[in-house]
Length: 179
Ligand code: FES
Ligand code: FES
Image 1 (cartoon, rainbow, N blue to C red):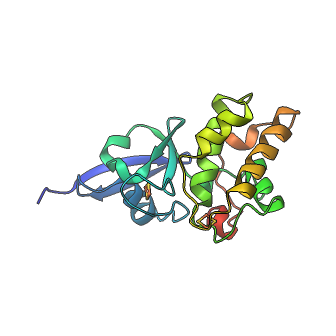
Image 2 (cartoon, rainbow, N blue to C red):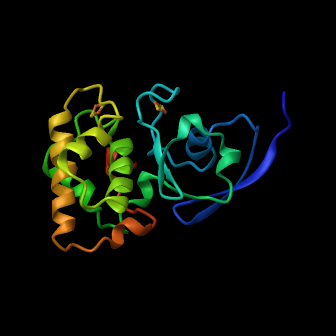
């Protein structure tokens, strides 16, 4: 068995000093090491997308990445999506459009949508659907999830500031919205 290593992970703008085995996944490091349990573990082999976080702005399946590989990167989780008590437009849209059923997949969808919004705010509807198809919802309530993401994209395109996407501690922990 490999000896533990000491690493620092930067998550939502905060440094976490961790001591862990090199084989520990980024997902386990975020949940168990950093105590940020908003990122969920589903399949644990890269299929469901429940564990999606952003690593230097790219959506990553945290169950497929070793924590040591993420050292030095800016990691963002669902806890960092809100700006203090102000939910991100995507989170508000999930509530407004009933995009949360059991909520287990919600953090992954939110982070995937946030990354897409930052990279391609003008993305066409069919392409957005293609992007979202990479994540699974066991409740199969996809229509409301897609409607919520589309609504947030339209709202933000029409002028709402994107400031909440740029980090923040995330004080609003409402169940699937990151708590
Ligand atoms: S838990 Fe990582 S993709 Fe399913
Ligand atoms: S809301 Fe239940 S798995 Fe997605």
